[in-house]
Image (cartoon, rainbow, N blue to C red; front, side):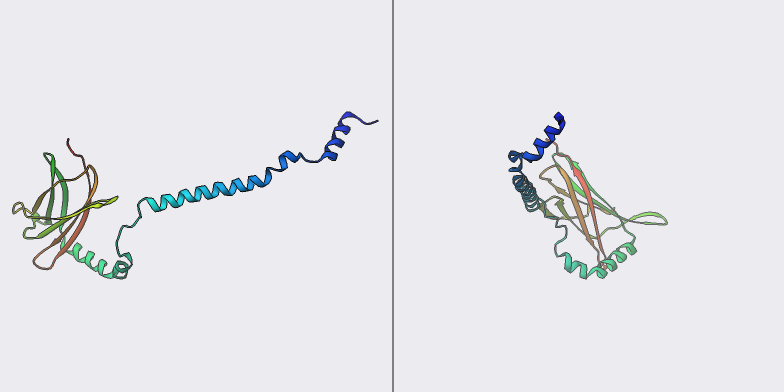
Length: 181
């Protein structure tokens, strides 16, 4: 005499797996690869439509001249100059202010008679690059020029300074601009 559990087990062995469930197995593989293709296509779209990541134009050529860059930085450090770069609110506009001085044993000596230019760029948008000249404001090492920021946010101000004796000085400062309405 057979018990009820032996009869159920025997029926399962005779009928095998459910054919309705088996027909979906190939579709699971298709769906898996479709999801992978969808995610990969999203990655490609975002990679092509967002910031390129290019920070330096002609990076390879600049890399070849790296020893010259190091020598220029050493020469700049040997000058002993110190700088301050500011974007000062002036009504609805701003003024770009650069202060150049040289600390010494008697305090601070302002450096006058320099040619100062500032390149103002928006870090994430290359459409807003502009270079302006900063004339000396007074004989106190202060160089000042008005400039209107087209929008609020972060801006990079890169200064290039040259003197009568072939001195070269470069610096960059990131500023945050809040525009008044």
